Length: 133
Picture 1 (cartoon, helix red, strand yellow):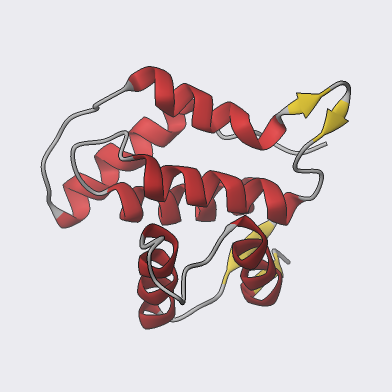
Picture 2: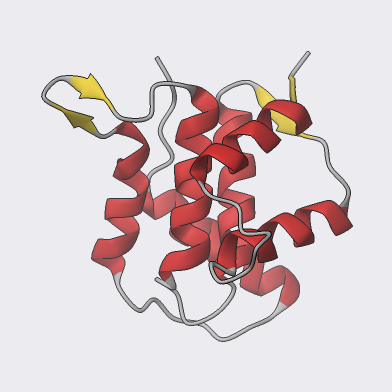
């Protein structure tokens, strides 16, 4: 059983990100944030669509980075939300700032030949995540 990151927590993470790094305040679509918070736990006909922790984190990361549910700081909020989600479930992300920025840009730029989809994000997370001791 995995711990879910709520829409309210994602909004709090976004607000903290803006407080720390600046940006334009505001939510474009609160309902979409709620949908993105629920998506990692989606079941169809009783079958979980994202059964592993890494897939759940990846779909959350990708959704928040690309949905533009906020006026600003979508990619920053996406990564921070993914990191908090992993932490709540017993893992930390150990990657350099440059690597994190690169991954965020690759997720957000669907036109790039270096684009990362959910599977690639999950694979990256398996490499950079470590259990909390």
